[in-house]
Length: 273
Image (cartoon, rainbow, N blue to C red):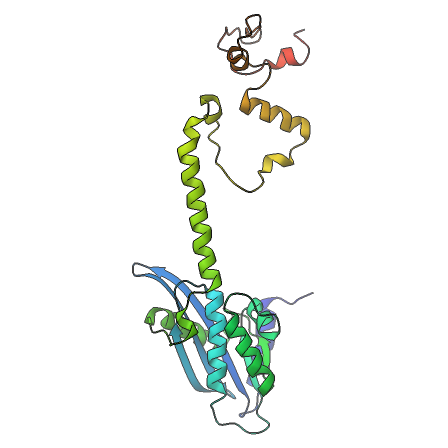
């Protein structure tokens, strides 16, 4: 069973405060935000030697991406910078990341999106024996707070490093594709629902490709629901559609004459007492 974030953060802080001066910790974060100027995505990192701030960095990435991409790239950029700092043969380096999904991909399983950043991280981590530790976010951890502020500033700076950070990511392109598909579906439904019968349109149903929750109803209940929606069965509209001249469309419960819309429940249960 995992521990809660507050306990994990306290444990992390105790560990970090006890690190020797030659240990390097790299805190990184990503940011994704929207304002009147549009969408902003970027990263930031803060590098410490012991408990002393040694270097910082920030930048933006292509806006056809998401915060996960920014976190992946930020961790790589921070690691690359950390490897340029003076160090001893016994210097330990730690990537301190607040996203468990990014940690998972940094350790072994590179995601499809921003895969280049994960694969390059794998190469550097293996070559330089870099460790990775979870640093719970929004818990007052000094390095996390610094990286978070830098990521926000980097995203809004609009300054994108040359190279792969200028390219859209799979997750960003996927969001565009899903949005286009939703719009196409919505437009198609808007144009075609007018061809449906008035009785069906009155239900004001949306069109969706995923399985509707109604299919989880018990079959007898689902049968009645579908009959009500389609008016297929012992309904006044059904009898009129197929010109059943001898059909009884007078409801003995309400006293309504031939404009009865729904099947009379008393008759369907076997008649009135």
